[in-house]
Length: 276
Ligand SMILES: Nc1ncnc2c1ncn2[C@@H]1O[C@H](COP(=O)(O)OP(=O)(O)OP(=O)(O)O)[C@@H](O)[C@H]1O
Image (cartoon, rainbow, N blue to C red; front, side):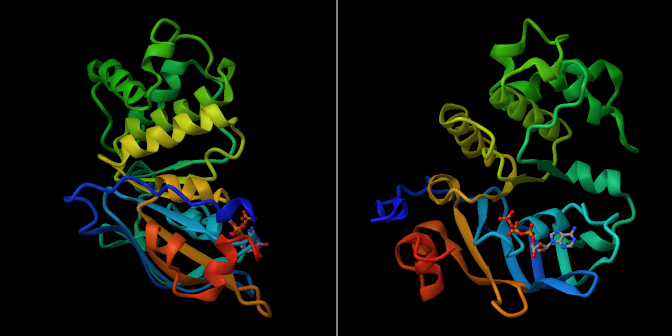
C-alpha cells in the first residue's frame, strides 16, 4: 500500500455562495518556451472563494500555468501564449498595468521571500505602490488587519519593527501571505507554499488557507496529495504527453471525486502512487 492509498479526508465544503463564478479561467490556453510547448489547450476554471489545487507529475506545467496567472513570464525570453487566461472575465495578457494585475493576483512561493525590512514594512510595502495608493493614516490599520488575517498578529504585535528575515520559516511564509493580502487581491496563487516547512508550520498554513478562502480565491500547486485532499475544493490533475512533454489537463472536478472516483485511469494511477 502506498501513502496515497490511505483514505483521504477531504476539504470542508465551500460555502453555498462560493463557486458560482470563476475568478480565474483558462480557455484553450497554450504556453510555449520558445519552440517547446509546455501547456497544451488548458481549459480550467478556479471558482470564486474556493481552493483549486493543481496536481500532477513533475514537469507537467503546473508552475508554468500558475505563473502565467500573474504574468511572471513576461521577461522570460521566448515565452509566449495562445488562447485566453481570464481574471474575472478580463484577459490577463492584455492588461496594460502589471502593478494593478499583481495587486489583484497575489503570489506566494515555495521559499518564503520576505523583503529585507521590518515586519511592518513588509506588509505596508504594497499599500504604497500603484495608482490607488492607500492614504498614509490608514496604513497601520491595514497592516494590522492583514497580519490578523494571516494568523500572525499575536506572534508579532510587539515586534513589528524587527526584521522579517529573523522569523521562523512558517512565520515568514505567513508574513508573505500577509503582504499579499494587505492589498486585498481577488486571487492568491500559491506555488508549493509548504514545501520548505515542517509539519506543524504546514498545518498552520493549511488552516489559514481554509480561513482565507472566505475572502479570496486560491489556486495552489502542490506535490503533497494529502494536502490537496485536505484543503482543496476543486482539483485539477495534469500530466504530459510522453512524446512532446506538453502538459495537459486529464480531469478536473470536486476534490472528493477526483480522489475517490476518478474517471481516468491516469488519474487513479497517479493518486494511488503507481505513476509520477
Ligand atoms: N524558463 C523556462 N524555460 C524553458 N523551459 C522551461 C522553463 N520553465 C519551465 N520549463 C519547462 O516547462 C515544463 C513545465 O515546467 P513546470 O516547472 O511548469 O512544471 P511543474 O509541473 O511545475 O514541475 P514541478 O512539479 O517539478 O515543479 C518542463 O518541461 C520545464 O523544463
